[in-house]
Image 1: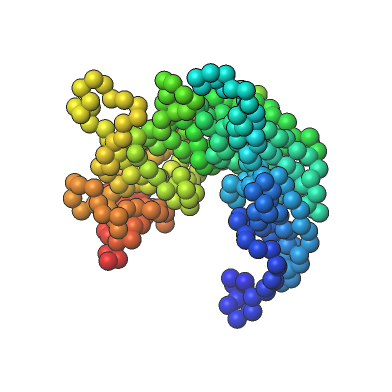
Image 2: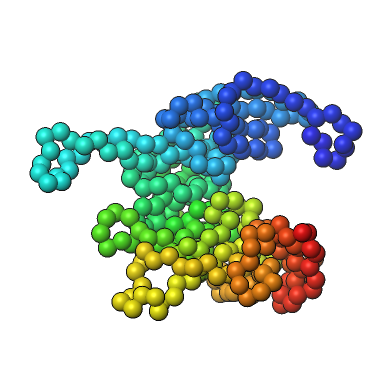
Length: 353
């Protein structure tokens, strides 16, 4: 569709592919993925040139695709990260030794590079077997992956040689990231949940919203250089499911995130607050941060659409933020609120109800 000339007819192309799951678009190609089986994903490449659309290639990779950030085109190669389930036989003693091993399904993460014919030319498989795949981001000749079960390994994958992807290094910290946002070529922002390891069992208890800054300049030894946690267990942000809810502008040193904040009342737990305890949701709105590599994440203030001190109804939950010139706009179903970007002073609001 020509966004500059509405009189121009759109170009269309129909492809028989069944269900489409995710899509990645470069300047010249559209890649559409479709689950072929539970163990395999089909990829279609459609080439764009001027007003022409041409179906060019079809290929398959093992596993399933998490989202659009699990895919990328770089040079003459298409890169993709997938997750798949593998079965493993284990002898587990419950009350007495078992004569027959139990078959356990384990999740693993893979990275593949494909040529323009969508044939696999390089593969890195069985990364972090047994852990859930939470996030991926391709930046230049690197890929960053987040897996999680009890702690959060952030993997740095080298894709300089498309035929031989390798792991350069990894960082293990508490919590996990559901979304990775590049800050610059050597730093990432992660948004996810803080966690506390369970005393028994191979899992961890989710806690509040966690925002991290990762330094990956030393690829063999990435570090978490700053982080903040918002709220207690039962806190939520739409950024965990939709990256469009995050406002980040490096030149403005600005990061804004909509959050629902839950708080635990310690007086309800005279013997100490258990890590499994849920907080009560008490506040909803946007947290506004100054973000720099020198100072990390510094809270500038927060904005809510609530009209009283109580938790607002869902129609007043902030879901999007943006700025125009020196004004910060926060958007809910019920209103648009305008605040000064300099000091968050209230300017006006528009009632949408």
